[in-house]
Length: 434
Image 1 (cartoon, rainbow, N blue to C red):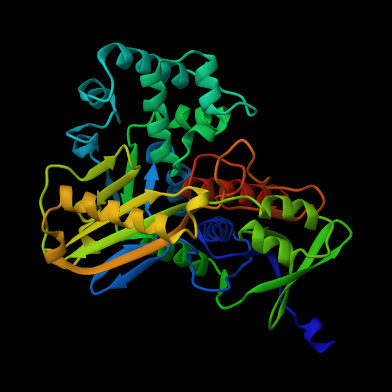
Image 2: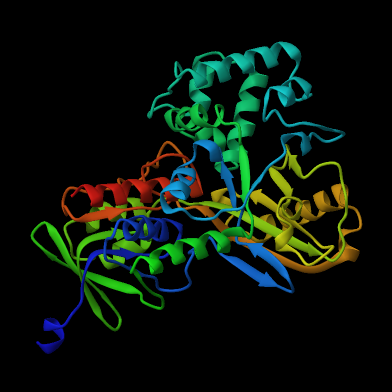
């Protein structure tokens, strides 16, 4: 009884200290709300920067797409956080089409220089982009982008170009399965940006540190090694969460942990079965193979996309010199994985072989300069893989009026990290409106 009398109560408790959780906590703390972040492990979730032998490796790409129209740009202004933006140079991006390299059609100049399509198809592709920009093409939630293009009799080369772009922007080896409405919603924004791809100086850790600073400077609390195991409900409200050691009372709750973990926490509640539906979804997995080199291998390009094998290499250190020791180079290679490849050692080893061949082809001598490699054979790029059988989870479920969700598996704007930022932004605004 004594513990209950003196138990602290928070205006908002945020479960999960990844990008979504820290974003929501920082936004609410900045508005004077008493917030508590509970994270079972290390802050950042899957957005982690690890220092190995002086190289700062990010777990997966830390690129921000369309930063001039991104939610993170709004968050940067509202929180007055300091982000060192490093903009991607489209002129240094190339497609590897086997016997030659050609320009990536990331802008109009690249489009008319690329050899991926003939001139007639370039005009058709430009027309498709124009229709997407002005919003006349919206797609349909029950029609895949592949089926939509076939129904509209889009030229095959144009179809292939659109799917190639989707593969790299959605981090998937099966872009043809993306629902057409998701496809067009995304490209409506991306085609209008003047900053298609941007990196954060210092990697994810620099952004995480800024979120933590804002939270703590505004009186928010962060607890790590605090795994939430259950919730307590009263009628249509969540009243408290329990960790293995303590319980915490709150007025509002934002859960920023994946559906598979949510099911365990909400076991026995009236939304358990709903959450199970999302917990069975497949994630988007990639093979990540980063290499830290003691000496730079200079090339005229900073991004290579192997169109046939769906593998790309980015010279991260070209954009962010802070991630390497003096004179060093950090290259990141990512291969998109299909669901049936996961756990298949032979197929996974084949991806590693193809990545190393791509390094050999475009960065000759890398093996002699290698200081430290970092390989992740099953990295989750996004907790939801966009297919016709999978839809994003709502941010708000009416069964509990003070419960909200955020993360890259939730309904919001954009893809990958942008989904985390935008869903957290929407969830925090809903809390503030109450």
